[in-house]
Image (cartoon, rainbow, N blue to C red):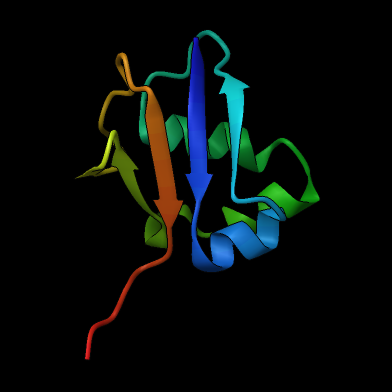
Length: 85
């Protein structure tokens, strides 16, 4: 299954690109599992996802938790926590 991944703020800076299309390996079923797999793809990904508990995610523009199934997602976005002011 191919999914477009989008990266924002320091997640994008650490990975070095704003987005990419990936083929998700079999057995990856949740957003948290996807983050773990991404962290294994290289030093830049490991740095971006070194603390996955603080990374926020959205599936097809809806905010989700790490335990959320990927299902038939077309796009998953990752971004750091945001503050307002």
